[in-house]
Image 1: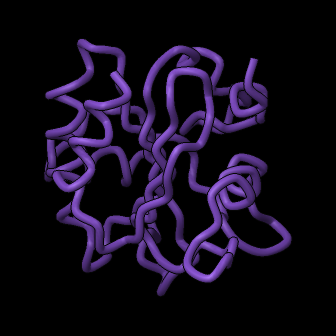
Image 2: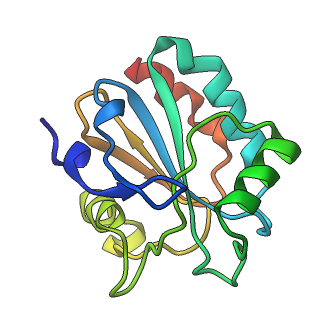
Image 3: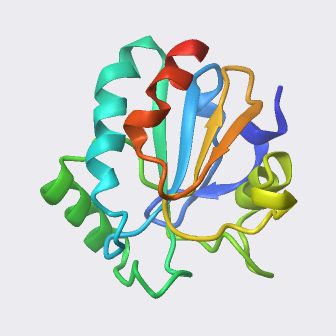
Length: 159
């Protein structure tokens, strides 16, 4: 089993969990924010969820407030915003840090497995995306400006 599924993550209520329930699915893991210029990507992420969920795909959202304090809300505020504004149905987890000493173990793993431009492991901004295959392998990292619809062919190829 891939190490990805054993890394600790937190549910929105703060309880500890893992990605084990998503083993065997193609995943798109995204650090999200509600007050970012890229926030409208929630609509595209939800469109991918709607299009491919029945084939074993899921978007996983990890709210992050490390970039311009663009995710200031608590878990309930984030969930309400996502549901009411973008009709988000994909799983959202507890707010995390993706960089620095307090970076979540999941993001330390993702950054190492799929470095960014020029080998940099740090996340540069909100809506950085990681595509994971059914075996838990990190296939590709996408920049924040990459639109969700531009990832659809890569997702379809893994399904």
